[in-house]
Length: 236
Image 1 (spheres, rainbow, N blue to C red):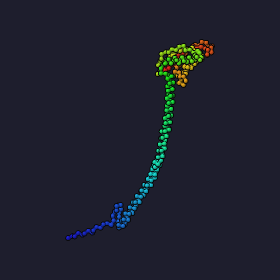
Image 2: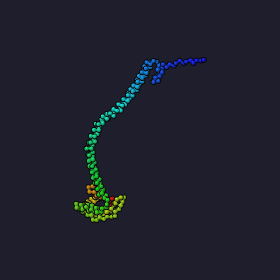
Image 3: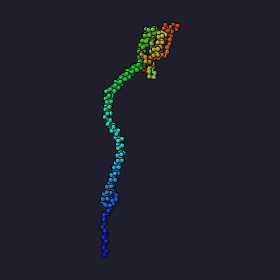
Image 4: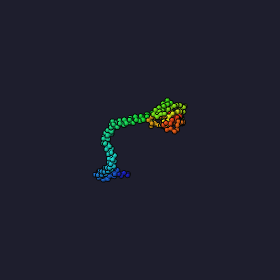
């Protein structure tokens, strides 16, 4: 009968692995020192990486936060200056600007009114035959009183003609004058339509003149001139 041979008892191995997956061989004191060494080495690595991170982050943080901190510390003084400027603008500058604008606007409006008034006289919105007659008669009265003769014998109006947005009124006149006053009449028509004249005259032009001298040998002041003129008076 065969009897089984008993197996020798299995003993625990003297070596193994710790939590760091490092083979541990030896006595417990040696294993403990080994573990402490590994922990110390890992701690040194942690401090090294921490120091490296601080070496990188600290200059960056200083470069980034220092201007922000300076701006934050300077903000109250700048705000006080801005508030003072705003108060000065509200109390002094803005009212003065508004006052100046009102003065300029008043002067501009007055200038516009003067220009519009001048344009209305130069190129009125209506034919105004009565105004034309009065203007010629006033001119004749003044000239004849200072340096006669200048007599406006007749004024005749033709039919108004519409042309390109304005109206042309034909006027025929017969005048008795001397040579000097005849030239003054021509200057009157030549000055018409100018807005820089003190006495603005509505726009007129001469279409035709017939002249007859009484005695060509007399001086200009004494030489009587009879002439008829065909004028055009313009309106809008």
